[in-house]
Length: 494
Image: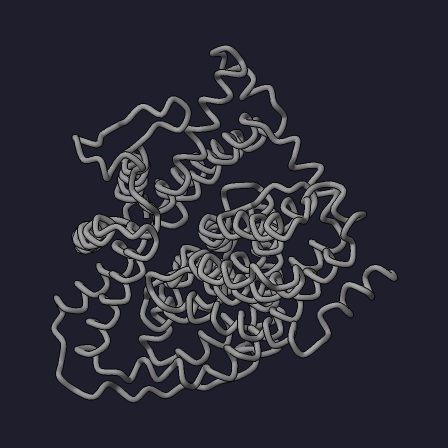
């Protein structure tokens, strides 16, 4: 208890609190602007912390991390463009709500459940981190392969319409992820002589192209009126939901947050996958799955609770085992090492005050995120009143700047533009963009762990079926596919 009190006391000074607020505000901006991400924000601020004290540096970086993950909901709802990969599923219902004049409610719900999701994951981080980390450290290639395949079967729940087109979209995503160096051998695949493809397609240009550039092209195809925007009515509230709605959404919230925490703990998966899996789970468990994608709060809650809960989840293996859960926590690991802090099982004993200082920084950043987003909501909604002929070119420029800034390559801008055209054509013919992204994200996880598992078992597939955890996930994956086929068959009979 003395260590916890000392940790919280270490950040209760004007400098640390100011750095948290500054970092959170900057993170929200990075998350909200298409093409910029929380990882990019942390990477930009990391060099500024070299001369600072460790706790001061981590206060700033934690603020950027928390703000960046939550900030993606702003553009996801207002522009139907996910600011970060963690906000892809937020566009499914947030966008339609904004289009029918409920932007204020959608933003209020998103911000409130972002706050609750992060707060719940902080509780998991503080109280059950060591136990959870000890469990997940036992996961090997067999278990990760099972989890990857299970996650891939969620594509059926993300597709509204033809399941065949949804599966085709998913296969396209898997194929796109095969381009570049093979994960184990390093052999080049499908590069066709272009050295820029040696590292494959980066996630950021693909995401920006499919969701941002394609949305710009769709709007342009419909025609842009030279007006001054449309004045929309909206209502701002601290929670966005009534007491009755809050009670109705409790199960959805806890299920989504637990999915986010669980996936956040698993290294290499992160919020980009958790928000789509939580959305799929919410749709599967809903009494009215047909309403998903038309603009209901259930989808926003599932996405935002899970992606923000994955923040605490990703910090668990980092703080207890020294294993980063995603790209941002990998950079946080680098920040700790730069300040001479050895991360691992002994961190709680050797630097207990610092550890609980980081926990306190996450708590303060979560509160700051909620207050800043709530206070700026009226300003955010005004984006809808900006004339489209002004807004669309600005979005396109930001997308180009963001994709170039990731690796300083013009090729990435070209990639985003090409995928924008692909996304536009896919939407025109009824194919699913979310299925493409899900396949693209999960393919490296599935392929890498399949190869590692086969190497470990000397070519035998039996261990994939005899490992209890892997077998469980694979069985659930098969049942999920059977259930989806049965549901589509029953729908066809009607």
